[in-house]
Image 1: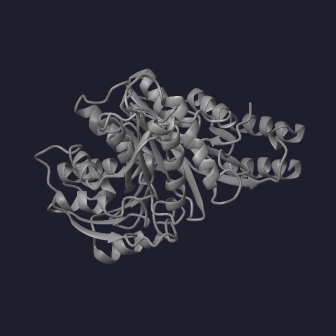
Image 2: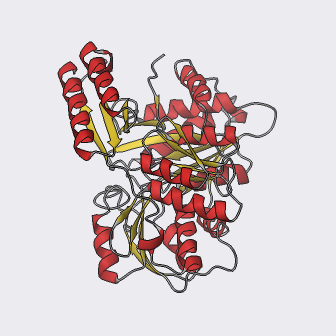
Length: 445
């Protein structure tokens, strides 16, 4: 059954348009509250947000919803998504909520939900909450309405937790690091954590004004970071997204390093120390074939899931893996966090720079990626992937690449777009395959 509210990563959309309204947020608070109010204890929810202007409105609406069904609310203010997952567990809360549209620009916003264990909710739990959204809420009696309070030490708690992901004998005194926080949720905590471990920190994207989140900065717009790393003669650059659950790295030469290379480095280092579990890494269908081939040379496997860090996490938990992520930069290190954490992954990379004593350009380009091409086709409705012409083009593309590459076609979970990705050893063949499928989708759409 198609969902009205929840997508690939919670609820997301343009503020005051469609599902992303204050009314919806209040209803989500009531529905999620009704779902999690179980037993006789005093129920509690932790709510964090990024730096979007609409965060104030959405926070207030969620607080109204949760308190109306009898849940107490703890507000943290701007804080990374992984910090909310952490505090949900630490504060023995029944539920955690992050108000963020991740890497999207400020007009959008979103709602991500975490269970009491700090993990994102399953599809089944989200489906049950969605069903409750269509029903009148069970309101608390007047004397049982929840209370709301704001805590002031949340940032310090998270910084302390992030620093614990690095061995106590490691210091970053020898490193100059440019950190781009996308004017987002990590604008204070990420530079502080790295500075407290001794690095010379140059901070970018740390002046949020409510409307500049991810605007020309952050993990989806790394040009400013690339220039600054070279200009400052820095050892490395770190780019986080708006809610800091993912990162992209820039080496000292200004070259981009994506999530696949980061996973390769972290997994290899952990494997060498006997700390890697599960016998490999979990990533999505979008990860480069070169990563898979490289891991095979190390005696490790690459297990693939559909796109979405929540699906990566589910497979990690099922198979006992402790390293997983996405090419886009979500890094899930289960020894340290229950969700993607760009700051923790960044500290692990910096630790490797110190331990190995080599420049980032040497240690971060672990494997040669296979030529890969991704194109998006926007459509206005219907189901273009069900069209006979599209199915025929896909079969032809798969036949062309058989044994020499991969084809991945998927609809976006957040917008009306079909994503067409192919990879293989022959770049011209890859481009031809992608173009043919895109043309078929456009015709059908």
